[in-house]
Image (cartoon, rainbow, N blue to C red; front, side, top):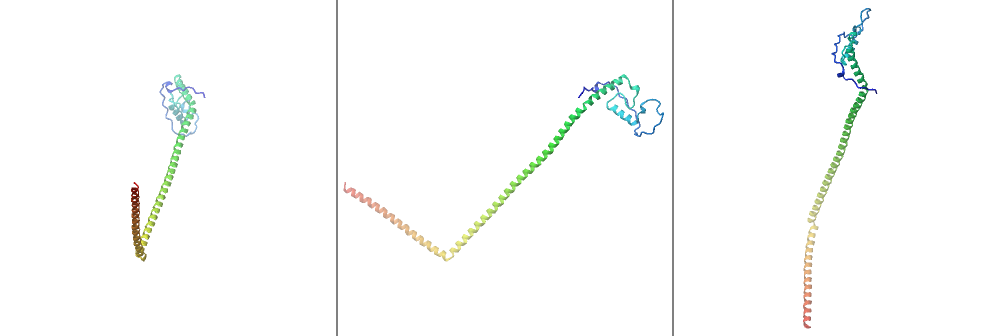
Length: 227
């Protein structure tokens, strides 16, 4: 691309732009009348086009009003100033494709950021949903565990109480029945037998000790006889 350095406005000739005329704002073409203009002038330009040309003059700070100018404005100084502005506009216009290219890159980057923000929101929502799902599963699992433990504890305590109650009822019934009296007699007999056994055991132990002592004394007596 042939892009030459643009001429900045500071390089132009400082000539105060002329004020544009105030043509009619009507956009109607109207009827044609022969011989209306006797000499060439800006009045020959339709009013809407004069407004358009004046706007161009104001936009680029031209030293003349294109909507109201003529041969009297074509001075060397004016032409030099207009040429400098035209060179600047032409040079800058060649940069417009590059400006459009870079602007498109900026816009695409901004769109990419918007897409990133949207994807980030989706990812955050998905992340939150998965965390909520996992937390819910943990909560439900623990709730089931607590309920199961409570049922097991209640069932165990209930069965233990029933067993204890049954054993107590059986014990009361046994004590208040004939079997209870017989068991007391049997217990007494066992106590007597145990006492007798204890007495026999003590007597046997004393006899064993006596025999042992007697043998020792007899041995000592015999030994003394051979000394």
